[in-house]
Length: 149
Figure 1 (cartoon, rainbow, N blue to C red):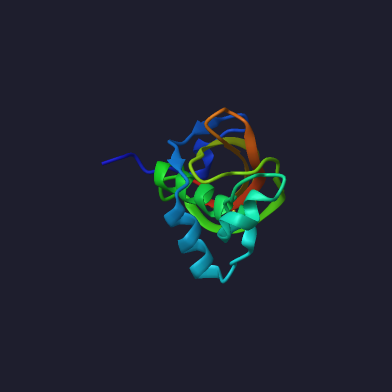
Figure 2 (figure 1 turned 45 degrees about the vertical axis):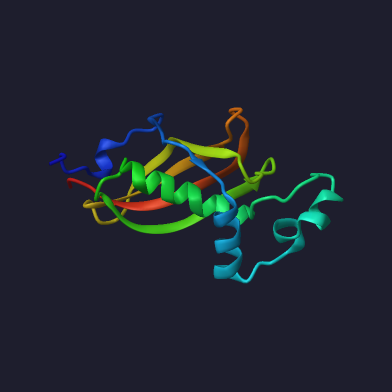
C-alpha cells in the first residue's frame, strides 16, 4: 500500500515523467467516433497525403486527453487531487502522426493555499514529447489538492 499523498508533498520545481504510449489507428478512429471529428486530415489518407504533412495526423485534443491519462496512470498525485480547475496556455507545437510515441514531463510550476488551509491549488506544466524528445504539446494544468492543514 502506498503512502497517502497531499498537495504539500509537491514543491515548485519538482519534475515527473510518464511512460509512453504509441498513437495507433485505433486511437484516431475511436476519437473521431467519440467526438464526431472526422476532419479529413485525420481520417482521409488520400487527402492527408496532399497536405504539407504528407500523412494523417492525430487529433490535437486527443493528444491532450492522452497526456492527462498518462499522468493519471502514473499516479504522481495519488488521491491528493480534489478537482480539476482548468487548463491555460495550451499550444500544439508539432504534429503527432499515427505511429508516434508520446509521453509527458510534468513540472510543478506553482502552489498556493486557498482560504481553506486544508486545500491548495497547484499549476502543473505538462510538456508532451514525442519519440524524438520534441515537444509537441504544452499546457498548464490547474488542480485543487488536499493539504495536511
